[in-house]
Amino acid sequence: MDVAFSTADTIVAVATPPGRGGLGVVRLSGPDATAITQRLTHRPARFEARHATLAVVHSNTSALVDQTTADQSVDQVVVTWFAAPHSYTGEDVVEISGHGSPWLLQRIVDLACLEGARLAQPGEFTLRAYLNERLDLVQAEAVADLIHAVTPLQARVAMDQLEGTLTTAVREIEEQLFSLAAKLEASLDFPDEGFHFITRREVTADLDLLESALSRLVSDGRRGRVIREGRMVVIAGRPNVGKSSLFNALVGASRAIVTPMAGTTRDVLTEHVDILGVPVTLVDTAGLRESVDAIEEEGVRRAVQARAVAALTLLVFDASQPLGEDDRRLLEAVSGPRLVVGNKSDLSDAPLEWSGSRPGEVPQLVSAVTGAGLEALRATVVAAMAGGQVERDTPMVSNQRHVQQLERALVAVERARKNLGEGGTEELVLAELGEARDALEAVTGRRTADELLEHIFSRFCIGK
Image 1: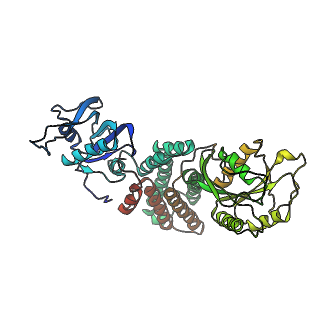
Image 2: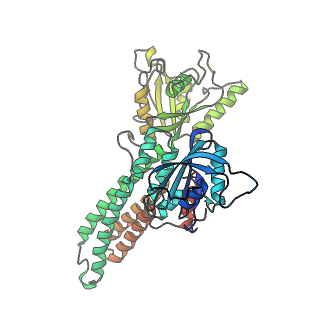
Image 3: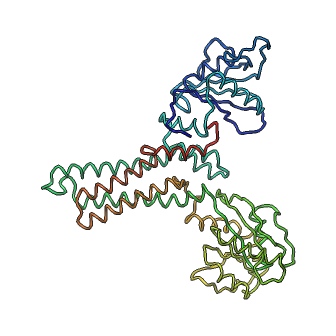
């Protein structure tokens, strides 16, 4: 995408997903959107803004008139015109709602192009909304997140960002930065007086407030990224501890074969699940033990590989039996993030005999058969991945780019505070505050390179 293109042209694209359906929408945006639609529908009068109008798209347009072929009706449609600047893009926008045949919709697009429109590039409608200041960059990125949301919590986070929660928080911090910088700049006009308009103690207090606000957003972003991007969780353990039963219980369907015979699972089995609003790729693996069976041995090797890339490993043990040597070897082998799960808690009233290898690590008792403890396990899994209970608060930050810029601003404020503590001058503090403001402006898009815009909007589908 060339983000330096002229917005003087009119773009067109199918705005609904590929495939057949009851309805499909072709969207036009630009100065000639209504004129092109009038020619497509042979309508001499202008459409009325924000009113749905029944019309017919014709095959013979002013740009393509074949005197030997009778004019044909392409589709009966409903046309809605959103007049600038009160539209999604801030330009004249026309939405043509027709029948959801891919051929019909593409035919309308082709005819519109013959009349002077240009096929839109991915994300170009939303890019125009950003360039016309209908959305800031945070809100524009939230549009893509909302489209790609697969869980209710993902959709809620994206919708909150689209409504401006993060933008509001960032602008409040920007205002604090601007106020502090203005006082320091004024002090530079009186070099003999030192910190004339604000004392060092007041500067320190303001920097503390800024550092606290940015730290909260950065921490918030680490939780939000888990919701936005999801994580891989691997279920591991020795054979016959109920790994596949637990996998089925968390998935909510009998995806894995469960038998009393040890070593039933020979390969990794993957399923995408929604755990308290967080998209999780759940992986069931072969039981870990020494084996002379070549197939089972390969399954164990793949289980080890899956653990190596997982965000979290659920180490499953049989809560009705004491820990064995295979269990202890597994505890020593898994060094990354993990949760210890004692399955089959329904088979024994006696507490699990436990001597874990990590201080404070206690098994979470569950029963994959009765469902006991599963809700608590789901909450613990999400908290372990996100560093907090994400379902209590909707995170304002979920985008990695935003987190990186907020971290950059936080580091700059921390350096400013350190410089001040070491007797630094107003100039040194102002330089760091300027760095922090640049980072925050990059979040909302007020200071963003064209290459970054191209990367962001190229992720969108055509028609959005």
